[in-house]
Length: 447
Image (cartoon, helix red, strand yellow):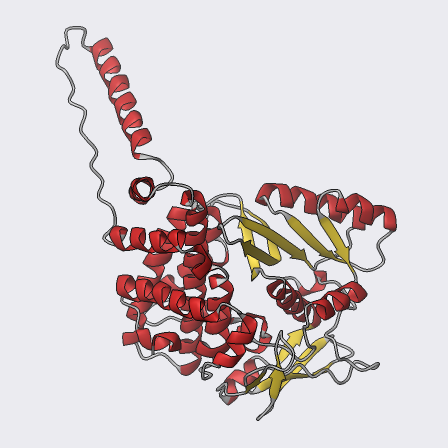
C-alpha cells in the first residue's frame, strides 16, 4: 500500500483545529490518540475501561481486548491514508455491504506469471434476500493524476472487475467532471459528503469496532505471512490466496481452495506459536470463513431458482470438474485420441487397431454431500441467511479475534433478525469445523 498516493487532507472525525487530539476509541485496549503534524501519522495509545457506541445510538460495549506490550509497540502508528480506508470501510458496512480492504486484482491465477492490475482500497458486497449481489469500490488514492484521468482509469478497472458502483474520494473536483463520472456510476465525494453520509447512517465518530478497527486489523496479513513454524510456505500461500488469488477463481474453486486452506490452518494448533502469531492465525481463519461464505452465497445465487435435484447435480459436476465441466473434459479427451489416431495412421498406413478411449471417472470431494446439504439449507431458507456475511464478519472481528466476550445486545441492535442469524451462523461454523477439523473453541457462538 503506497502511502504517498493516499489522498491528502482527510483525517478522522473528531480532530481539533491543530490536528493534535484525535480520539478514536474501540472495543479493545488501544485507541488513536493523536496526529503528528509533520509525518501525518496517527499514534495509538493504551486505554482501559472505555465504552463506545455503535452503529445504532445508545449501544455500548465494554473494552476487553488483550494486547501485550510488544504488540502495542509494533502497531503504534496509523497513517491518515489507512485511517481513511477504515473510515470508508465503516461507512460501507453501515450501508449494508460486506467490505474488504486491500483486495489485489491480478491478470491471472498464476502467482508467478500474473501481473497486478491494482489494489482496491475498499471492496464491498451487498447480498440481497434472493442472493442477487451488488458490488461497490471506494478509491481513496489520488496521486498526481488529473481528476478526469483518474476517473477514466477507474472506469477501466470498474469494467474489468465488473464492479457496479464506485466511490472516488477526492476534493476540489469540477462540477463537469462529477457529472461525467456519475454517468458511469462513479460518485466523487469530499469530506463534507462523507460526514453527511456518516450522519445518515448513525455512525458515531468514536465507533472503531469489528473489521473496521485498525488497532486489531492493521498488518495482520503481514504478521501472518511472517510465521515460519514449521515453515513459512503455507502461511505465504494462504496469505496470497486471501489477498489476491481468491478473486481470480470461480465460486466452486474458491470453496474448494478455502476448505483446503482451513484444513492446513487446523493443523497449526499443534505448534507452539506466540500469542501474536496465534492472533494472526485466528484472523486468517476468520477471513477464510468469510470468503467461503461469500463464495457459497454466490453459488446460492446461481442455483436459487433450480429444483433441489438440479442443484445437487450442478454442485456435483462443478465440485468434480472445477472450471471445466465433465462433459467438456470428455470431449477434449475424445478429440485428443482422434488426433493421435490420425497421426499414427499417417505414419503407419496399415494400422487398423481401434484405440480405446478411457472413461474419466472423477470422484467428488468427501464433503460433497455436506456442502450440498448446506446449500439446500441456505437456498430453501433465504430469510434466515439474509445478512449472515456481515453478522459473522462483525462477530469474528469484534469478539472472537480480540477475545472479547460476545455481546448479544449489541448484535441484536445491529441485526434485527439476530435470532435467525445466530442459528444460521452455527450451521455455517458447524460445517466448517466438521469438514476441516477446526476447533470449535475458536468460535463463541459454538460454545
